[in-house]
Image (cartoon, rainbow, N blue to C red; front, side, top):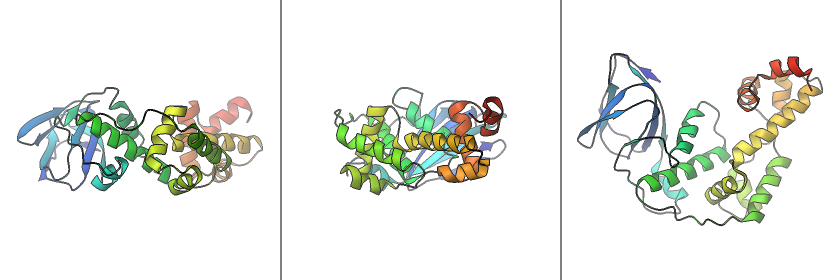
Length: 247
């Protein structure tokens, strides 16, 4: 979203509001203090805290934002207390880069697997920024993450819900999301997307039209496949077909 000559009056949400300034200067009053959020910086607002919002200069500002239910955060923390982040403006750092990446991708359809990954990432980030150490175990259940990976690879074109992976592995969705990333460097949802792209490429090589290849691979539509294809390979499926002859 981009705002130029308009502003938000004081209001509040019953959810966490976690966003990133993408352009210009954003300013808002929060807990009695005027704050400034520059491009690339995150803002983290606790539920039920009054705030406003406006451009800090005449050029306006752009931002992306997620609203996350407190119960989702609490569930990802195993029922622990909600984290409170005292400083609402955060610069990019190891603890916040994954959140920035999530915000970059919020235009894409959010699958059930992606919801678990988002909840776990946000909960861990909020806990870290709130001064609480990550209490999740550093060890990895290799059997569980291996079962999850194998299942996703074998059923890449299907809409596998997080509950199915919980049944397959015997591990709750939030723990599985954390351990999968530690084991394979990516999320279950992203791993499945890459397997789907492999299926799409194989379908295109067989001569299937792009729309049909997208459907066979499990993408929502051709546009969804094209966005993911370009993000992974740096070019569209049509361009890839021209350059490689479909191979």
